[in-house]
Length: 115
Image 1 (cartoon, rainbow, N blue to C red):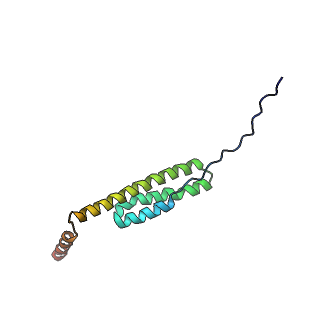
Image 2: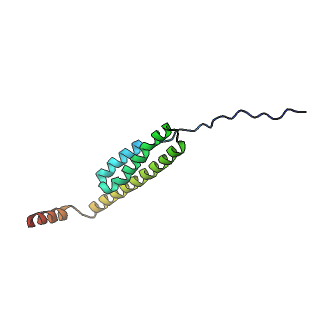
Image 3: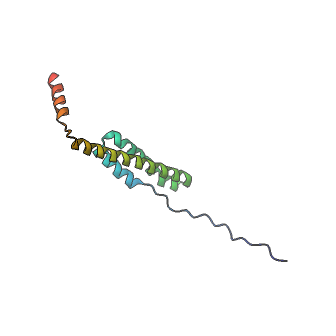
């Protein structure tokens, strides 16, 4: 008779690091403030919030929560990046079309003179 097969002892599954995307979130939010105004930077702030949750959830032992926060941070970073690219293209396109701020400057001056 042969001995029953022996199985190696269960090893805890090793996981790789979970990226938090915090640097990307901060940098793209700063660029969004400069290029797109506040509306374009709101998703960047959301990305920063999720990115900052990754390490704290890992520290608390919530690996699934950390992975979820990481995925959400990455998604919001991409959304913000897309808005920045869109804002840049709009700025370049408007400049190439000959748009300048003179119209709005005149409008503001007229409004100030009325009051």
